[in-house]
Length: 310
Ligand code: SAM
Image (cartoon, rainbow, N blue to C red):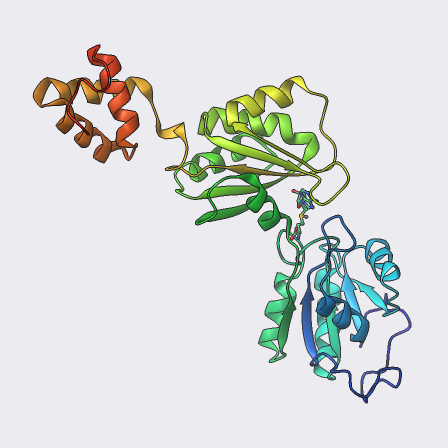
């Protein structure tokens, strides 16, 4: 049976008369459809086609989705599927899929399932033997990563940090070990306190705060975590939507503990040549030889160029 909140549903079988004969209708099944994260034009042609041709669109907030649909002249009925009604509505969606309907799933913005509802629906559809398809498109996590200026070869999306300080610190301590760019979603109002906690646990790693992507007030602020924490502590509470990105354990200076480095270097210099000491400490810390070399020169009071090549 269809969920009660369904509107004027399309019939569930037979070709839809309004479609031109040549048009390829999306296959029956559940279609995960990505929608814009701010700019209504950021939607793929295929996403529009699936939304137009689906029997029904399952969405988080119908007001948000209807605005998008209207902007693109789409009149497909919607039904609500959000974290508070998901357990009740999910079986009804699975029944519709079993009848051969095409159901599109969207969230308020970006890609469903990415810190948004949908995971349990995908699992339930697969367990019921129903096909699941995707019309890929925008996601704030990847969009923020590519403008952050941080390494993109390896990254970890960590969703939202816990709101409570102790749990947040515990999670940050875990994340501190990961040698990959960290991507975190964050409510803007919590940005100053979260950055302060991050600077505390992760140190002065390179980071970026990416705000209001694809919107009028899009902003990318880069710098050391400590600088960003200071900036947002002093600034007015930021507005809008925010992603925080931080260099991974091996990428930033968080691992660069000057006192410990000096201790290691002095010990190595006391036993071997400068060249060998630099090589040994570089291998042990993972820090670039050039950086260790500069520090070794400072410690020994020697000038660059007067030493053996490293
Ligand atoms: N599923 C969505 C996606 O794929 O982008 C993310 C949904 S999650 C509930 C919402 C979070 O995404 C926001 O708190 C913010 O961290 C991030 N976000 C969404 N739109 C954004 C934008 N335009 N600029 C920056 N961050 C955004």
